[in-house]
Image (cartoon, rainbow, N blue to C red):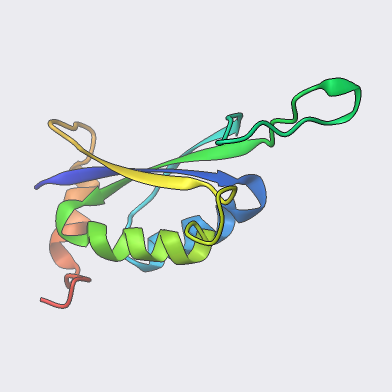
Length: 117
């Protein structure tokens, strides 16, 4: 079975919405890395001239390849990722190998595809 890794970088207040949307779209789980920080195109400077870095969560969502478009669309909508420069990003990477997924593969083999086929 082929998998893709969807990595979403979202504000903490959007994490639960994005995770719920990804699960509804066919993802079977995620790993969350909290309190990540990053910079956008422009630095945000606060009082005393210090840079403000908003905390974000990194969501690592392993998705069956045939479901990735549906899950990505759900993540985009739930995270409002295309609305402005500061809403976060999501990327998809190919997964060459993965272990520890026997139960997930069995579950996915029983489910109806989410891509309309």
